[in-house]
Image (cartoon, rainbow, N blue to C red):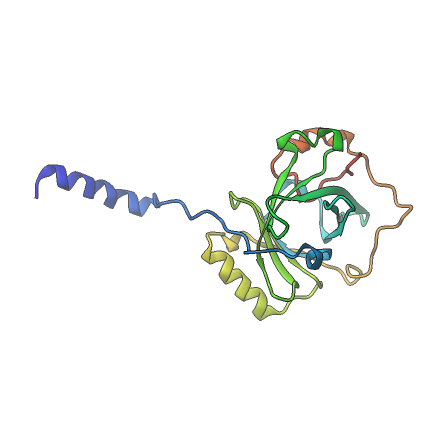
Length: 220
């Protein structure tokens, strides 16, 4: 074998043990999303650890409702270590057609909505036929949430979901289970509850990860 043929083979043989493989395929969403069925409350079952949820210790949930303009109101909440409820109000929009499973979410005020960096990707990448167990991520696979309609999830269904997520290049070993207390399924946001304003959160609006839970509300 000539030297010019040997060298490329040696380079490839050296790269393989180092994990220099081809990057995973582009993350795919589910084929179509029925937004009307997706609306309502979802409980966080597990997630990839992230900085913007580090103060949440339990009872993390999201509530989605349809607005008159076709966009989606987002209400995220979680329990802090001192027992208080932290709330974030935001807005979501579909990217693509009416059945697109690619959404973007912002928690910045409406007057900043023209800025691309205040919107974060929210891709529904797995969803059962009954719309009871979902997985949400984004193109870079840096974030992942597993959501359920109920605080308790069937173990077999959960393991099957993890297997599917692993098969599309998500490191499910990074998932941490979310704690849900007995009161998680019954607490609601009081109409009189005060929501912390968003002004101190300006820096976090610029983060592509600022599409889930932030200690502030969206101000129109």
